[in-house]
Amino acid sequence: MTIEAERTASAPGAAEVAGPGFDDLAAGVDAALGRVVELDGDARDVADELRAAIEAFHRPALVHIVRTLRDDPRGKELLFELVDDPAVRAVLGLHGIIRPDPTTRAERALTTVRPYLQSHGGDVELVAVEGSVATVRLHGSCNGCSMSAVTLREVVSEALVGQVDEVTELAVVDDEPTAAFIPLESVGIKRDAGWREAGDAAAIVPDTIVRIDLEGTSLIAVNVDGRIAVYRNECPHQGRTLDGGDCSDGVLRCPWHGFTFDAAGGECLSAPGAQLTQVPTRIDDGVIWVRVDA
Image 1 (cartoon, rainbow, N blue to C red):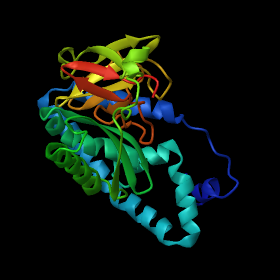
Image 2 (tube, helix red, strand yellow):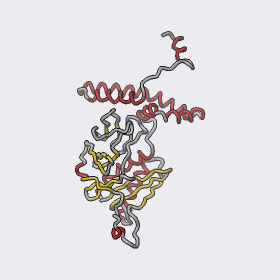
Image 3 (cartoon, one colour):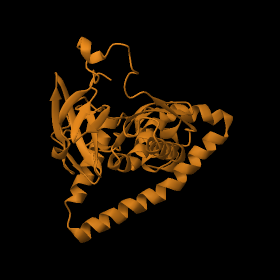
Image 4 (spheres, rainbow, N blue to C red):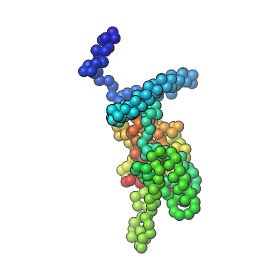
């Protein structure tokens, strides 16, 4: 095609040829990456170097485009519209130009301190991130007024404020209802109402996906660096089950179309912005408890 023909074809009003959809493109990338993993050492190294070189080549141009749009009042609104497109968001996320949402980053921050909390008989559950306030529920020795509990709360606060730019304040909600005049147990109401026993924590070993079925709800549990995370057993891509996939090196892979997720926080790595539904979880005396109705 001549230069003039190219100009004519790309001119406004020229017919656009529909290409593959986002799901097909993402599946193609995952399939190609799967084949690269199967290569022998030297060939895989060359393929990885080529991928890294291509990404390094593209990133400066993408950064320049985003900065130009962001700094121009006319382009800022257009930029916000563009990142709503899953394909655009996936590419910008791949190059680290846009970040996961504050809730995902808060979950990651708590993941870094959970082993320490659990080693002291405590745990933490993220309730919400609203504006500059992160609300958590503390369990075990993290809850209360003792010096140990105060210290553990400070560890949680430092992790959230230090790793999530938007968060400047920590709010704590009660782990259990305050004392009443009539003990709840005496009228047949369990203190742990809403929490359901989900099995032995020791059975959730690293690099595995364990399916848990509770009262008609299907869940999966994974072990990431000693911390157990529980999710609803459905891929946000097409809602199919995840228990037939694999989990290794902190990455969970859907068995159907190869979508990958951060096993610790649930963020989709193939299409940033998608998210596994995490279930509130706590570990008491080696037993997993979950809130399936949360």
